[in-house]
Image (spheres, rainbow, N blue to C red):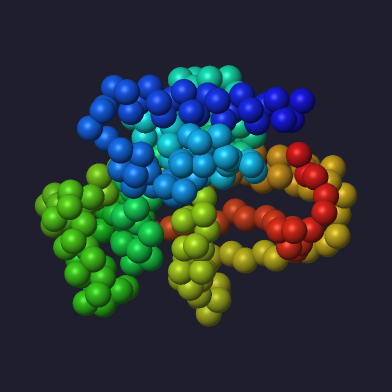
Length: 260
């Protein structure tokens, strides 16, 4: 059964790529790989039928998002074949809320691999944006240079002295976002806890899979409520604030056990 599902997924992706290249004969497979931020080796294996293992989920997301020119994650699932939609929902469903219009842009994945650009863009994505003074205070002259580069590229837009992200409600490839977690955590200032600006909780225990599922569902509900608070007009203010909701097993990637 699993083999059949994988074959359907690979065939659907092959058909999608072939149709896209057929409509755009000037494009090569290498060019498609570069523009969609997918390793060219992965596309070559896929198109030659040599894809032995499950294709990386973020590569599938990048590919179909680019080909269909659809940035809205929820809408994207409705535009692909059922096997592709099931695959993407299995891997990314926890990040999609029905009330959101969050966008996913493969081009941003390329630009925001740079840690400083990512942090500046995140600040600029706030409702009130940011400014060069704040950028320099946080990231120095290097940050100023990165902000100017993004302005020149059209990723940032300036209005009344404020810098605003071109796409306010954006999502990144999970692997890229995870790579920037240490940079976000560095903003945590335990010495200011008495001021009521931050919080920190760290819990760990060996659990059953059912308990882990229960915790994940609870976290999802909490994140939905936090998102609702953040999007209330009366909540919007001058303080750039972030929250990270993360849970994971303390196992290596090669540890046995199927959690699906």
